[in-house]
Length: 151
Length: 151
DNA sequence: AATCAAGTGCAACTTGGTTGCATTTGATTA
DNA sequence: TAATCAAATGCAACCAAGTTGCACTTGATT
Ligand SMILES: [Mn+2]
Ligand SMILES: [Mn+2]
Ligand SMILES: [Zn+2]
Ligand SMILES: [Zn+2]
Image (cartoon, rainbow over all chains, first blue to last red; front, side):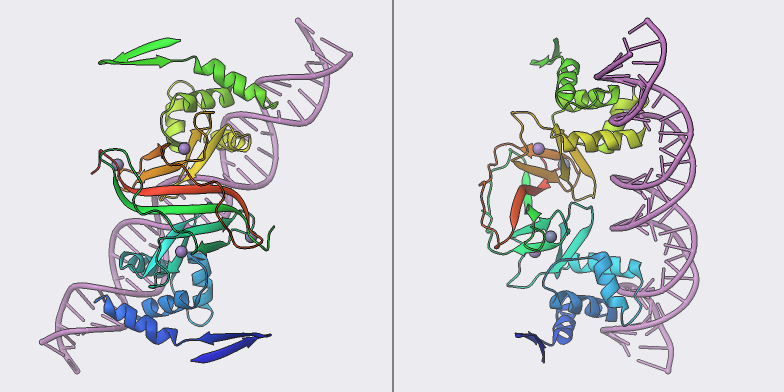
């Protein structure tokens, strides 16, 4: 447990590496270094990240092939450790699924700076009416506009 | 005004070319052949089309450069003649904006056949609460699952 | 320590979309 | 009707996100 202090803001930084390791092991698949490291990063983050952003952050300390990262992210999505969000710039953004942060909420995307924010306030009604024969898997609600910094 | 009959279903096919021409002229910008032709096609269609799908349909009769089509679609979006929908396959889909078909409704995307259907039934509440400083421009609600043909 | 499928790195590829620039065209004007 | 000229188009080259194939490496199991 590390404590960061930025100005007057105190941030408690939990031991995300151990948490990530545990979560990866729980899937039953191999607990590889890159899987743990990537999940660890996503656990730390407060907003969804693109493949590029993740790659840049991870490559600061140790090299990681971009194809491997694509496969790691794909695997984590399949294992429900993370979820991905389709942006207006045709780029996926990834965010960890925790108990607190399920993917049943809306996302805000700033059309000026392209940053994505999760709108946890927004609750969606779980069973909308669909045409006959249609099967619902997921609902994605995206709000577009300018964020506080871009207004 | 042409009438088509498929089995017992009678379809009235309006003069979309003249309608398209009129709509393009109303913008004040140049009423070019490709703009009119593309809008004409989208007026006829019952569901959103990708750039590819539009290109294929238009190239049946006369050649049209793909870059020009990209620019025509971009222009029509800017002029609010059409709107585009972000799909899970990282491909834009375009659909005409008519008075009846505003873009304030939800879209269903089949994750098996990738077809997109407009859910005109779905109404969205117009003013959701956002964090302070955030400015809303648009809401996009996408429902994912299997369509009637893929279930 | 030996085993071997699962995971990784690398190169080559695919695809949707963009950019720069020379040529053509549609509305305006003479 | 012909001249004009910015707007629109066609073409080639480019870009970036994501995928595929295959040889090499590694983590769990024995
Ligand atoms: Mn989210
Ligand atoms: Mn629509
Ligand atoms: Zn912003
Ligand atoms: Zn389908």
